Image (cartoon, rainbow, N blue to C red; front, top):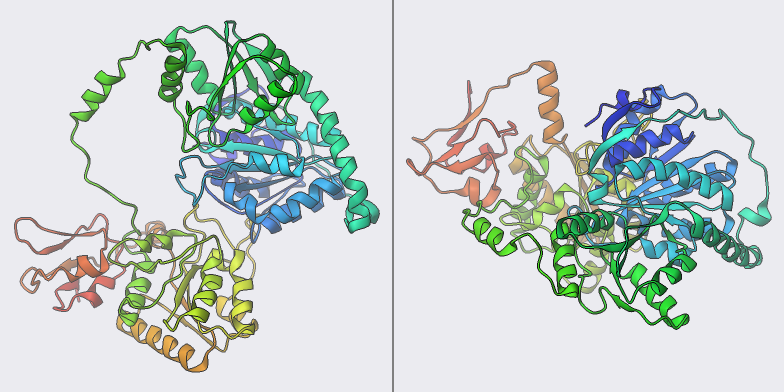
Length: 630
């Protein structure tokens, strides 16, 4: 990956190999963006990770990791209304969180360029659903662009800001995982200056959408999107290439698969590549359909372009065979690949590809399968100790609402402490619902970043309505799952400024929680088990919410701190003479740093993986796990 300081270079013409996310961060400089706000989420994480280190070195620039996506969109939207270029970034499900301001922002519009970068995740490599965010542009009547590679990620971003200012509307800038995490040589352009401060000019009958105002803004919005459609017709972002009887319409990363498939197959086709996918260039598509008897639509996830194309074909009585998802040629699930596109084109054209896929599959089939390696909590993760204590204290009989974060991995055996999950912050709210309709104990868990992002309303709801729930806040001092970004409890901002962190225990008390304790999961696992039991008992007797804050830094942060300080704490080992091979350390704790030696049939600790948390010491009933020198 490029270093953040490389992205700051004022060297127009220089070519640098960048991820698309890094190219977008560089594009922020070249577009003269004054403010960027986001909530971190893979596959968009590297945008914020770079901007937070670049920000202190950029004159007249502000960057923040907002509390959640709704807040981020409101912060960036307000800046654009005030008159400076702004950008908001999130992953696909994050746009769901920001949907409320999203639709209102389209009605009131903006005074300066604003781009909303949303990174969708086909195949759900790091997401709870396969959001197809293109439908937000359709519902909100908001212009949308889709880059196909890192080069377009930067160049198209610059166009998106211009497009936004022409029509006084935010532009939805949709990427997908394979675009975000692809590298390409990016040519640097000049860095635009940014204004320091601007004066907010009042216009409440535009920017306060009470019903009477909204009624006038909706026709304005529809008129703006029609003007945008006219520009879309002639924009170089929508172009055709190639020649042939077969027509192909595509966008985003699928365009790359189409190009590769056509080259490998030596197949001639005319391709219509859409960079602006809302509003779609209807006249351009109509003309394209008239030139072909058969048109294939290649797009991942939902039939967004396909539906528009079929509508135009029917509306204008164009006799053309449109082939895509509706006939089952392409799936509505998961990512595509050049092979998938080739196989569909072969089926449609009744031909064979030069690649013998059967032979390749047979060769691959002879390679022994790797041992299954499901995602696990890291060795030394404080969440493992917390979950071990929760399950031990409740004997596995409680209901365990979970949330979005590393700790969702507790779904796997032997911890098995994730029973229900809807979205970020849902652990507390779902706990309330379960507690009201069952007599079972309910112990919910939520991470520190998620707590601040969307857990507070659930706490307020539980306190006010006196829900009999228990909550363990797993405070590992960072937003671990998406790359260790700061949050309001860490004491550092997106501008790398040190501030006073918010204390989760104080926040809970301030919201009216009567029972709140902060504990260290590594100090005493037995003590932690007792604390969980006491919390459950108190909540049951008082019919009110109770909270434990399990506070210990992420194991990766702790290990990094040791390396920086040159510390080498004593290592843990298993005394083979004392070990009885009961496998409790494996069957109850399941630390990935431990395994059974096939020769001695005794437990062993892998020193290269062990993060020295010491949880296993408390778990071993024989006292066979010890620390050197103790």
